[in-house]
Image (cartoon, rainbow, N blue to C red):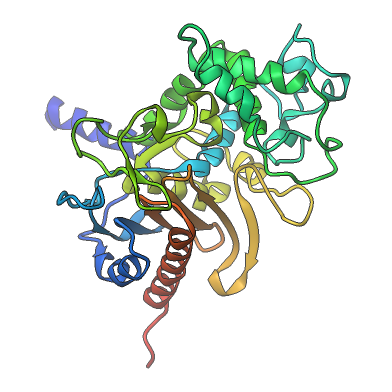
Length: 380
């Protein structure tokens, strides 16, 4: 065997060990499934994919990147994932836990040494922030505005630190550990704790510890594309108004750990496939199976929420389901991951609002039915 061929084979082996193999020959086109749903709800574009094991069995898109313009959306375009970022942040943190840089039981006083905080926060563990049971509010809007338009040009890491100081300087809104309260602010805090433990910005941690190992080359932060060219889909508010990338097209970068990641459908599918079979196989040299199981373990009831996932029991779908929606009020997406049956479905849309929510949910249900029909043996 030649040295060149041996090197190529070694590279393929390493790639197979480090990233999911997501390819079909070719995948079925879902454009026809999406078109009537998109048209019924008058949306600019929708995309969807079905992942079975490590293979994208079907993928498709329908519509345009910006309402009123001719540029068609494509299957390789990038989409804002909103709060579906939360599961990514939790996965990143689980890796730091495996390395001993953090513990899920790390408390606020341990995670932010020397920071003045209300006494009620001192013993609240990281784990509760990842489960929306820390006592943190949904958002801290006035502080987000302050760091976004404050004096100077602080980094997103500096901004997150200021947000955490504001949050922990006041008492929790509910008694920590007792009540579910969906909280973006809790995930800002978890991201800032990871930054404190590694002396590295959350964005850099995500690139080095999640995107690169998974081969998520399209993944980034904030709205995708250029402000001067319609080279990627643009988000639209519920009225249908398009927003080019810029300060008005997303939340403050300080809120990144709660919801600013964008990615192509293929790259998001790599992350979802990781969680679909991670409890059995581990994955991509990122986490051990027991870490995936921990991430999928809900705390409390009503709802059952794990680290970035709502956990449902859906026998007709194949068992336990991990699901989440994402939106920054200009995009809408949703995914359902079925670990017991090793498949996932995802839907993306470049508009927000009630119509987009209904359309995405309708499309998601259609994808599940499509996958189950394909997976079932034909009648004899």
